Each structure stands twice: as structure tokens, then as C-alpha cells.
Amino acid sequence: MKTYLDCIACFFKQALEGARLAGVDEKNQKKILDEVARELPDISIHCSPPEIARGIYRIIEKYSGLADPYLFIKKKSNKLALSIYDRLKEKVSNADNSLMMAVELAIAGNIIDYGVKNTLNVEDELEKILDEENQNIKSQLDSQFNFMDFEDSLKEASNILYLADNAGETVFDRLLIEEIKKAYEKVHIIYAVKEKPIINDALKEDAIECKIDSVAEIISSGSDAPGTVLSLCSESFINIFNSADMVISKGQGNYEALSNASRPVFFLFMAKCPMVARHARCNIRDIILKYSPGREERNGAALSKLT
Amino acid sequence: MKTYLDCIACFFKQALEGARLAGVDEKNQKKILDEVARELPDISIHCSPPEIARGIYRIIEKYSGLADPYLFIKKKSNKLALSIYDRLKEKVSNADNSLMMAVELAIAGNIIDYGVKNTLNVEDELEKILDEENQNIKSQLDSQFNFMDFEDSLKEASNILYLADNAGETVFDRLLIEEIKKAYEKVHIIYAVKEKPIINDALKEDAIECKIDSVAEIISSGSDAPGTVLSLCSESFINIFNSADMVISKGQGNYEALSNASRPVFFLFMAKCPMVARHARCNIRDIILKYSPGREERNGAALSKLT
Image 1: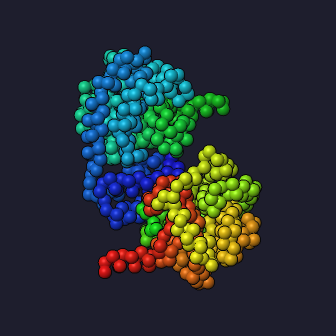
Image 2: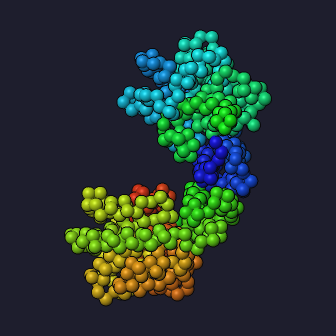
């Protein structure tokens, strides 16, 4: 997904919220906004939003001197999500289709996102997920919830690359990975986190804290963009990305960065901004499981229609 | 009201929406945003938002070549408001306190504001105003609805300066002016509009179209900022502003520009953005009639407390 012109106002909003969260004083908040403004004319809107956002958070880091202002939030999110793990697990066990429930919960867990909304009340949101009455569970498979394709792909896969999004959400990912491994014992799952702190995105330590290491191999993408921008990732990660039988991509940032990827990807996310919702043709807060066949396959299909 | 850092993101949003409404293509929309960005570091946040917004709309004008892209919208708003004049008048006549009702309707008419929201459905909003059930009429005088001060001031006034806001809203202003003149026959009212087109702000032709000339003298403020920024107004206007017995200021833009004025002002507006709501200590969409005693009087009161 390219950056829409509508995203520009949002970059300034994010810069200000991020600066405040990092404890930057008002004078330096203005300096941060000025620096973002100075860089804007040189930014290509053909970049994806996470690539631009990365630069913004680096400017905030320069002024705040803090490499990881979201550390406390990440620890809190991990702790909160871990505290409800048993209840989530029970929900999955009691479901008619436990894999589908695990998928839906993994997407619902994507609500833990401080890049979009700094004032998020994670406790309230997690309670909503657990609340049977309020949960936004898909009762039927629609065009934005490609569960059958997802299941078909799982059946064929020997190795899966799972792209993490936020800390805390990692617990929800673990539940889904556990369900996948229960159904397909021999599958090898690689769980990719960010290389360095960026917003509240999960790092290796978060994945370990949430016990992902008991079900998957944890690696770094080699990048600190808040989304898997391949041009910023390590060569070893790109090799895994290209060779995996299946890629499960969590969160809005990864969707923004990879929606035009050459290979097939399953995007599991909740749309949290109007531009992503527009691009994915869904509503804000919809639970999305979107199968993208990959640019190569799409181009092939287009060509075969022409010939 | 100074410009908050939160307003900066909103300036970019307004620039983009304004550019689109003026029919600027995407390439030039980006150029407009880049130009706003380049000017940002030089902008003092001690300016009020209308002063900065003025510059933004001038950039849009440069790229669109259109001096008045909101002309069609203004004409439509005038027509719509005129078409419900009789129903509004009836509402005023039937009210227990017709002056208070006219004040409340004049403020409700402030919903016609394209600077804040370009996608505004004026018809729907006007229907809501007319709908007895949904109207947000103050049943009691609270701290943000200084009607008694307003009435006391009217009793003493021989000449009143009424600062217009948007086209269409002008019809609501006429209703209030008619009520004022009914109660205080000899009062002379000067109705001040903008000098040149800016967003959907009322110009002289809008005031005439809405028949303000039958109840008041129409003048220009001499400025094309979307709010009465005194430093940009003509000398003759400033003289009238300073010498009027009473100033009635309509709309958010005028509040932003004049909230720190030296003289007393009655601000009639609906808060439409969170920063104005915070500054005025009200909620968004609240009907506000705020008496500001003026900086000089406030400073005097502060001094008298010290001595």
C-alpha cells in the first residue's frame, strides 16, 4: 500500500503523540514537527506508511534520547495479555471450530496498537474480546475472511513464517500457533519480530516473555520499521520470507508494507485507520483475514486473461 | 487562542480537503502539502489558527487558480437557509423567550462550516435544528451560556458590531438581529463580513442575499482570514471594533482570533474541534454563548486582587 496524501496529516499527529509519550517538552515537540515538515517534500508517497513512520520515530528518538519509550507499555501489554491467556484458551477449546476461533482472537488481539491510538485502554479492549456478547466474531465466511483458503494452505505447509506485530498481541499469536501445531504437528513455524524498538512492536524479549519460544523459532526481520518493509529487512530474513510455504502476516503495519508483495500472504489484522480500511475494502475495526495471492500470481492471472 | 501543536496535523488535513474541493489534481495536492510543510518551521504558534489557515488557503488558491472555490457551496447554503427562514421564524415566535431562542438558533446555524468538515450535509444539519426533539436547546442558563449578561449588555447598547461567520448562517444571524431590533428599536447594528473569499465565510453579497441589509449596515472587516484577526483588518474596521458598545462574534474562527481581545466580546459559536472545545472548556457541538470581559478588564481585576 502506498502512502495516501491523507496519511500526511496523520504522520504529524503520530509525531506529536509519540513525542509526548516520550516525554519531550513542548519546545522540542515543535522542533520534531518542524523536522518532519522539512523532510516531507523529499518523501515519496510511493513508499509505504511504515517506511515513513520509521523516520518519524527516529526523529522523536533523537530529541527524547530514548531508544524505547514504549518499553513500559509493552511490558504492561504482555502482562495483561498473559493474565487472560487461560480464559482465551478456554474460549478456543469451547469453540465449535477452535482453529477459526484462534484466528479470530489473534486478529482481535491486534487492537493492542499504540501507533494508531496512544490513549488506548488495553484492559477495556481485552475485556471486550473476552465478552461473549460483544465479540465481533464472524458467523459466516465472507469475502474479507478467507478462512477456507487459510486452512487449505495450512494443510500443504511444512514451514510457516509468522510476522509478529505488537507486544501483548504476541500472546494471542501463541494461541493461534498452538492451534495450528495441534492440527498440523510437523509444521515448523518461524516467528519474526522487529530488530530494534519501534512503537510498541514486539521484540525478541516480548516473544520470549509471551512464551512463543515454546511453539516457534523466533527470528528478527532485521528491520525497525513498524511493518515488514522488505527493502529494510536482512538478507537472511528475505530468504525465509521468499522460501516459506506460507506467510501469516499480523497487523496493519505489515499489511501496509506487504499488500503488494510478490508472494502469497495471509493478512490477519484489524483495520484501524480509514485509509487502510479503504485499501482493504473493509470497515474500521473489522476482523480481516485476507488472502493476497501475490503480485506475481496476480500479474500472471491478468496476462492469461489477455492471451 | 494561540495555535496548539495539535492544530498542525489539522492544517494538513484542511489543506488537502481544500485542495480537493478546489479541484486540484493529486500531483498538485502533494505540492500544496509540501509548501505548507516548508512554511511550517517559520510559523509562530503564538499566531491564532485563522491567521495560519489564511496562508494555507492562499497556497491552495495559487495552485487551483480559483479565488472562490466555495462559491457554489455558499450559494447553496444561502438558498437552503433562506428556504427554512419561515420555519425558523415560527420557532422563534412560538418560544417562551423569543430572544433566547433566536440566540440559540443563531448559534445552531454555526453548524454550516466547511472549514472544519468538507463533507458536511447541510440539509441534514438544518433539519436537526428544526426538529423539536433533537434540538440542543439550553433549558437552563449555565456557565457557558451567559444569556443574562448578553441581555444586560443589549439594554445598554446603542450600536452593536456583529461579526459574521459563514454564508447561510447569515440567515440565522438575520433572525437574531430582527429579535434584537424588535426589543431595542433604536439600536444600530453593523454586520461585518470578510473582505475577500475565504472558505465558505460570508461576503457582502451573501449578507445581501440573506437580506441582512434590511436590518443592519453591512461592512467588510478588511481581511480575508477565516476569523477576525485584528492585525489583518482595516483601520476603519478596527475603529468600529474598539468603539462599538457591544460586539457579538459568531463562529469558531472569530473565537480563535478574538478570545484574547482587549475589549469585551460575546462569543456565539458551536465548538467543532477538540482544541477549541478545550480552550472554551466545553464539549464539541455545545451551544456556547460566552461573555469575555476583555483582556484589559481581566488584567484590571487581577491587579485589583493584588492591591
